[in-house]
Image (cartoon, rainbow, N blue to C red; front, top):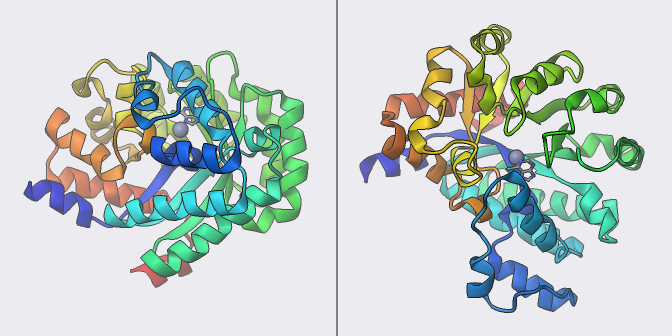
Length: 326
Ligand code: ES4
Ligand code: ZN
């Protein structure tokens, strides 16, 4: 349709994407064979049947299992490049991309291997597609706080290669306050700060992320819709929210598209943005996440242009980068 084509031409930033969540089933099987990693599935059809999720945890189980096929610097480079090709096709000019080093390190892959591969992919992707990339190192909140502390120590020598710190994985039972010291160190290293909060967790987790982790954006934040006071605060403080519509639908955070709180957030003047989270798992890249707002919520092109504008406004792009891009 005309609007679907227009969506792809809107200049936008992708602010919530897990690079490991761009691992498509066919590539997962190819890398498993290449790297000698055993998976319970040997053909794409069998694997593709596993992509029906009940909730966040049921998704994470498959996501972590498939992550084990990523081993070499080339694997990470190729994953980043494939993702940036999709991004460019969908009008993404700038991407801030999560990676989960604790999981790769547990799988026996060195931090440097992961970082160097992603950096190389980002460098080639910028040349090839004109998309700028920042890396957000994400702490896996269902691992111990000691493990998060060790990660900070391992990453500190590479502080300049990292744009920010994030907090992801199973949310309920792992509240933000556990990571207050980790985020203090991250701030000292000069990193931006974001955290997943209010995806499955309550609005109180959003409050902790703001008050104790001093985050500049909230990832998801879907449950802010439960609290008019929180919506007012997020608007007043100009805190960006990185919504991921297809993710929220596929993980049953909301029951149906009309339950997505995007319009409500916009009507409350919140800096809400549209993102893809784990596109290989949730049925589409960023433009598909904008598309669903048209078909499922009745948003118009000027609404989508505002959402795309929000994404550039709450990105961590510097003024020099902005000038170079536009
Ligand atoms: C994630 Cl959808 C989602 N939520 C929390 N953590 C994650 N890691 C990768 N995808
Ligand atoms: Zn996420």
